[in-house]
Image 1 (tube, rainbow, N blue to C red):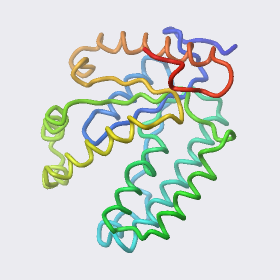
Image 2 (image 1 turned 120 degrees about the horizontal axis):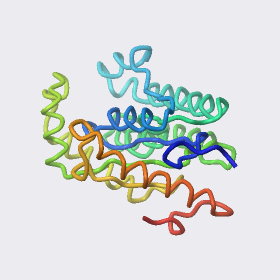
Image 3 (image 1 turned 30 degrees about the vertical axis):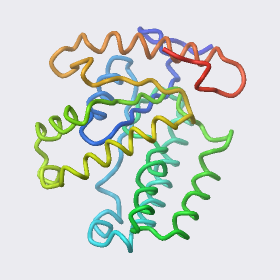
Length: 231
């Protein structure tokens, strides 16, 4: 049995934070990691060789970008589990295929052949019993209005110039994705129910839920089923 942290979370646990842009994934990642004395794992954007090319030509580079993300996230997931866990991740490997690659295909910025190739590779790498899935995926959700308010508040120039219709589409796509997601245990948290920036104590009940959820899911035998664990 693994050693448990102060909050009863196993020290070898791997927790992934998911949610749309502006929902507060990075802040939640850092706060949980600090409380549990876990390491953090963030997406490496600066070293991405395809990002600038992608923004200049979606149709030409969308497939390359998604393959790069898949490769990097797979290597990072493998590294985390080889290290022995004790990590909180900002974003999951599942969002790229469930949201972004699918969106490119549906909008015509990724061909059908490329999309099927990408999905086949993703399934072969990730959707197998050998892939080290996280102990818990925390999904941060909120009303569209609350999320837009947060995007406006942090004031990033590129986000301020993005049409509001794009944020609405992303909000809807994320909601549809999480409602059908079952690759690992999921704990949903509404961003209106806490304020970890201005109230440090609001993380306490979240940590209690994390502890309970992971311990319950680890007690289950056989393959995880989302119907077996509910909060």
